[in-house]
Structure formats: C-alpha cells, structure tokens
Length: 102
Image 1 (cartoon, rainbow, N blue to C red):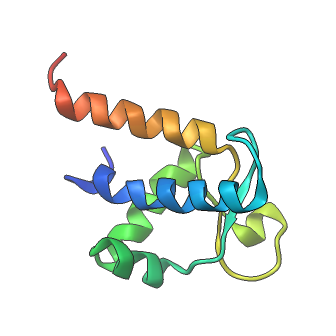
Image 2 (tube, rainbow, N blue to C red):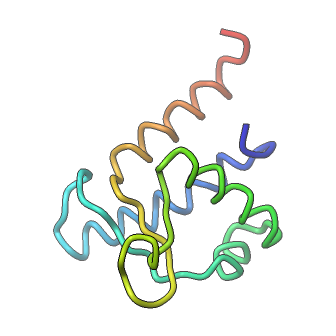
C-alpha cells in the first residue's frame, strides 16, 4: 500500500503526464519526462516531501516511475516510462478503494 489516501495524490502524476502527452502528441506507450522536483510535487499534492519520496520509491520499485538521470535525461525530474501502465495502476487503486475486501 502506498499511503492512506495517497492514491488520490498520485493522480497528479497522471494529470501531468496527460498534459505532456498532449503537448508532444505522444501515446500512452511513450515515456514522459516531468521536469519537477520532489519538493515541488509534494507542495502540489499537499503532502510532505518524505511522504512523496516514499510514494515515488514504491512507484519506482514497480517500474512505473524513474528519475530523469536514471533514464538518461540530463537535469532534474521524473520519467514515467509507460503512461499506460501508470494509468492501469491508478485504475487498480481506485477499484480497490471502491470495493475493499472484494
């Protein structure tokens, strides 16, 4: 589990990814670079930087998010290697919240 109610906060990554896809004309199977730092993301989603770092670490372990430098991009930021996989994961979290114990 990420953190209580954190999956709603992860939606911010989804929105930012979709905006990047629209700007570049890419599809959900493309990688998206989000030039944002962890503390800025934390501020946007109203969590502490350590909480966001924990969520990102878990998403990184699931290979849903990586750092720009790990992906071979110079500079700061995050990369979502396959936006479609992140969207599938978020859909799973939403269903799990709607139907606990199912």
